[in-house]
Image (cartoon, rainbow, N blue to C red):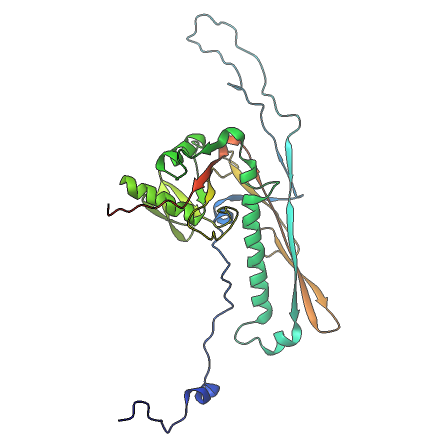
Length: 315
C-alpha cells in the first residue's frame, strides 16, 4: 500500500483562506511583572518636588526626667533640631513619541484596535524603564542611595541565610521585601536546600515568592548580574536589596506627579500631538517618577553575591 496517498479533497492551505483565524494581542517578551513599582508605596506630588526633612540624629532626641531617679530634680529642657539644608528630590521624566499611520489604524483594527495596542506596548516600555531607574538611577536609584553603613559583604560569595539575616539586622524596623535577580534568588534557594532549611513561600502581588524570616524575595532583572539582565554564563555577581517602604514607616517612597493632563495612571501622561500631512498620528508619552529614602535604615544591600555555585547532592 502507498504510504502517502494523494487525497482528492480541498487542501489545508486553500481552506484556511475562508477560515477565521484566532489571534493574540501583540506579545512583548521583554515585559516583566515590575514588582518594584507594585511593592513600593507611592506618593503623588503637586509641584514635582519632594523635600525630605530629617531630624539631626543623636542618641536621644530629648533628655527626660525619670521620677524614680533621686539625683535629678529639674525637668530637662531642650528642642529637637532639624537639618538646615534638607535634600530636595525633583521628579525625573521619561518621554517618547509614538507614531501611528492612520490608514493602518483605520483598515486593520479588527479585532484589536491598532492605536490602542501600540499605546499599550509603548506604556509598558516606559514602565519597564521606570522600574530600572527606580533601582539604578544615579540620582534616586535604590542602589545609589544605600548608606555606607548599610552595605554588607557576603561571607563567601554565595547568598546564604546568614547573609540575609545580616541584612535584616540592618533593616530591622518593619522590613517589607527583599529584591534580587532571579538567578540570585535561585542561588539563595540552593543554599537553603543545602542546609536543609527550604524557605517557605507566600502569595502576594499576583505571584508566589519564596520568603526568608517571613519577608518575600521579589525577583527583578533590573538588578543586573555582571551588568547584564541575562548573564551569558552560569557565574556572575549581583546585589540583593532589603527595603522598608512607606512614608509612615520612614521608609522608601516612590514619587510621581499627580493630576497630569492626559493621565493614564501613576505619573503617566499620554497626549495627542496631531496628524501630519502623510496621515501619521503622533502621541507624546511622558512619565514622571523618582524615589526618596526617608531614613538610612530603610534600605540595605548585600554586595558581591555570586550566583554560579552549584552542588552535587548525590554525593
